[in-house]
Amino acid sequence: MHAPIDPPAAPRHPLRIANFRAYWLARFSGTIAISAQAIIIGWQVYGLARQTLDIRDAAFLLGMIGLVQFIPLFLLTPVVGLVADTVDRRWIVRGTTALLVLNAATLGLLTWSGQLGLPYLFVSAVLIGVARAFSGPAYSALAPNLVPKESLPTAIAISSIAWQFGTIAGPSVGGLLYAIHPDVAYGVISGLLLLALGLMFLIGKVPQPPAQKDRRPLQRILDGFAYVRRNRLVLAAITLDLFAVLLAGATALLPIFARDILQVGASGLGVLAAGMGIGAASTAIWFSFRPMKRNVGVKMLASVVVFGLGILTFGVATQVTDALGITHVALGAGLPVLQTDFLLSLVGLIVAGGADMVSVYVRTSLIQLHTPDSMRGRVSAVSQLTISASNELGEAESGLMASLLGPVGAVVFGGVGAIAITLLWSRLFPELKNARTFDPPEMLETEPQHGVAQP
Image (cartoon, rainbow, N blue to C red):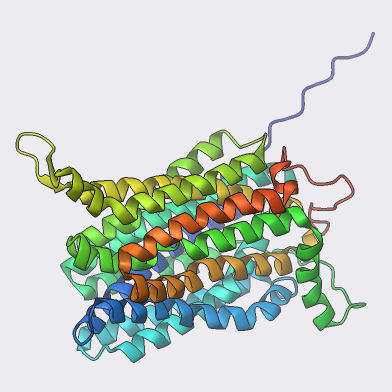
């Protein structure tokens, strides 16, 4: 007679681990600050540009803010992944967060003194691009060192919650506080970044991957790109997000819609900017309790199609409500009357955000679980390059298309393009469509072989 075998213990929730909890809170507060600053910089750039330019020319200049953030990240990508696999990842995040504190405080002082101009805003955007280039791979590669392997999918989901909640709170905080007074907004941003910096000092020592002394630095850098190219599943997940969001980056045009199309001002801009975050965070919360387990590839493809439809809805909301003759809706006795096109635009952004979170969750899980720990920094750098290309370079593309087609035409073009790219990728990469679970090949060593962060 054999003794009964105890069932395996449930994975420890990441937020019960002190190091991960500090990491999560730092990422949350830092994301709020950066999201708030991004929406304020966009509003200030567009406002200053509209003093002398028409809508299309100002839209082009607004898009250039994304381009100047992308350039340093593009140039530094070959280096930052290697740095994340060589230097203590905590100190990378600490250093870049300190740079962001100084940057936000400087913009606040320039705004307070009335000396703020477009050149200062563009220099600030470059510094943000440099900081994000180094902090992105370090943040991504640090998380697996803070939790055991069996807790990693949950850690990825709740890390996304930190980021998505930050994108909800950040634009709303930025827009509303800026409407009260710009100095207050920049003061809060600087304080949140200081909080993130302090929290990063609470994380215990993180062992680094074993040094690869037999590989030249340049070869180690190229190894990250080569790994992504060889792994068609990871390649498909990364490039689908790249091209879909590159085309459908409608959020870059939010200042234009808020000021000149929907006419809802800075506070309305904050609500619109939070729309995608609301949908994304709702989806991330669901995944933190009910992680996706089956048919992950098909769900990613379907989510990108829904994302494109949500962006289309946002773009044509004013035309649809005007055609139907329903321009305002009363919420009830004593409640304010709201613009129907504003509400429909917000719904479209919420749907797009929820669908985008599904894509983010699948892509991030595939990259983390299908990459050896010794290469996570470099592969994360490649992933970050494509994410920044889709976001920041997508802003430049949106600004350019808006200068050619107008803001509405640019958004419609992007939504249709995202759907078309998804259909094409389902044919070009059957590996993605056929992916049933996140499980990596058995021979792949994804668990850190050098230990987990000390308390």
